[in-house]
Length: 401
Image (cartoon, rainbow, N blue to C red):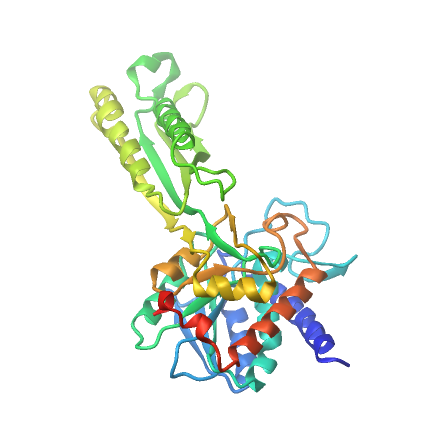
């Protein structure tokens, strides 16, 4: 049996095993992390863990190859989105192979990449790597890229940092050098309850929330008329209100209402201007009217999550390297977010390239094509061979120093 065939079998086995761990973001990922840690230890690779405050989740970081120089990070998140309310026809936490597809929660986003990385570990260990391969597997990416921050804080304090990062989010193995950033916020409107027959005397929280949402809609229209970057689809920053809750009964003046909104920004756009505008509108335009009727009225805003966009130049060393390995003429962009902007902000130039399509991510009966897994295996094998080359100057260009 060829080495490629052995790797393919191992990849399938590991995808099945990783999908079997229920790592929805509200759950612990420690069982999966412990499995990976034990697996790596079997090849003589030590792992370090970075726990959250309650120690029920952890990031894992490990190094294969020399430790006296910077290397390339292969990064992926271990958490997945929920399956609640979705119409699955296959068991979500069990890999099912059918018609050239591997089904299961996380097969596309993004346990298959992690599985293929692990499947290549035996090969990486045998290689004479001139630059190390680092493995970084995080938690809570799906709820705002929260977990990886403690890992990056640790890496930033080290005398020798990784010189590049490849995030294996699903891009159909296309080289992606840019994506949008995101800021998510929650607004809480506190009014005054009462009988609906006396509506003019109360403070209707839903109605004031509606005024705020209308303001956000207007800001969204301004964003569409602002900065344009044709590399993205849509080519401008976007704003939307996603959820709203309020009211107890039709014959009651609603005293409470809350809604969540998000801004998805072009890489260089600062979403704080949106937050500042809506807060100013609330404080200067709405709150005085509300408090004229009831001094207890209030409007508050909470930041739910935020992460920066990614904008790696095409001439960046790691971008050039991946284009060379994949035979790509250009790097592309995506509109969804990754941890890439955070790695870049930590001084680790980053590119996104992984198997599968985000069109299947977060969907019922999520799947990845077997052909995509094979492409990822080939890519990582080529990457390992490249990092064995004495002439690895492509990753030591001035932009990485």
